[in-house]
Length: 66
Image 1 (cartoon, rainbow, N blue to C red):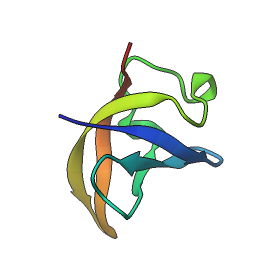
Image 2: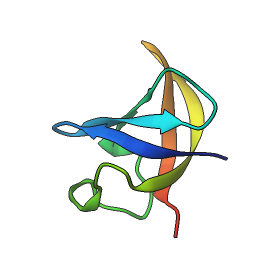
Image 3: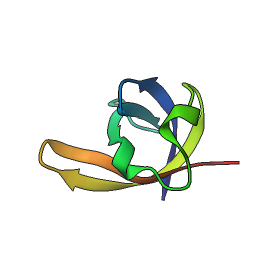
Image 4: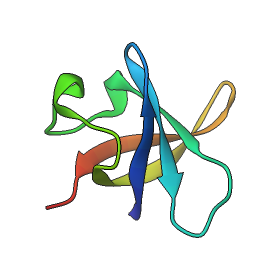
């Protein structure tokens, strides 16, 4: 699992600022685990796995870190 922070949120998707990486990572609402999209805020710390989507890498199994 990797960790990062929510960089931005849009309608049903967002981007995660990855620790040690320059490029933010896309995530979709369907990749969330144990958290509702509407409860996420920019700056929240999350953990996730990196998966391969049709447009390149994306975050899956995204959950909040306590």
